[in-house]
Amino acid sequence: MDNDRIQGKWKQLKGRIKEHWGALTDDDLQEAEGHSDYLIGKVQEKYGISKDEAREQVRKFEQSL
Image (cartoon, rainbow, N blue to C red):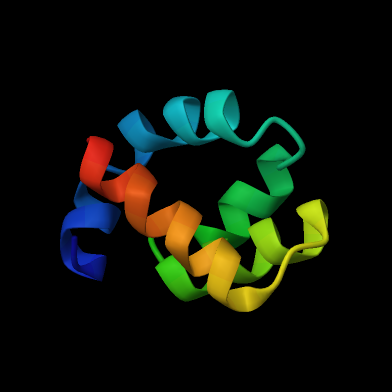
């Protein structure tokens, strides 16, 4: 999923992202607003995982949409 599509559906995605990664705050999601690289970084930071693992989790999440 490219950034344009993410931005277009951001409001719908925010709820699903919070369900999937409960440690992310509204502020995190507001900052991320449609930028998958920022989201990957926040998942990495909040869950203490490698960047590759965070990228893989976000990729799998995007595919599930």
